[in-house]
Image (cartoon, rainbow, N blue to C red):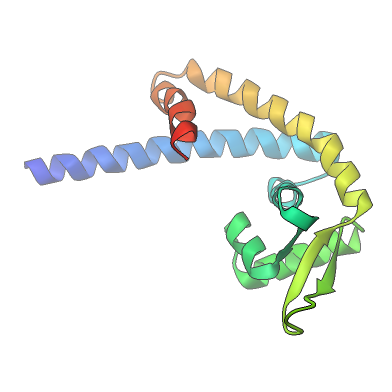
Length: 149
């Protein structure tokens, strides 16, 4: 392998390691959130993203970016959460074409119940990942990365 090939392999290995850590965390979060709060990870992500917005609402495009879903997948997800009474859609007062998605009181309550489950699972899973030699450097880098954001 040449120098360029080595650099590509290092980046590819880094990506595979990152994907492994993400997969581990997502699987544990999915299991905990489904079991204790009847929410999927992406449903939790929607509720959490909405809770962090001023006014507790977002346009559908913003929500799609926050969840890394396509527009159609975001619409289906919002429909399911709306059917459960966890959020609602409202027309934008400034732009009648714009639609906001907003948390309901039930959505806020469920998020408040789910957040400790999410946080404890994340903390536990990262601690376990710290004991895996291939994952430990990524876990160690997370606080430094957060400080730079």
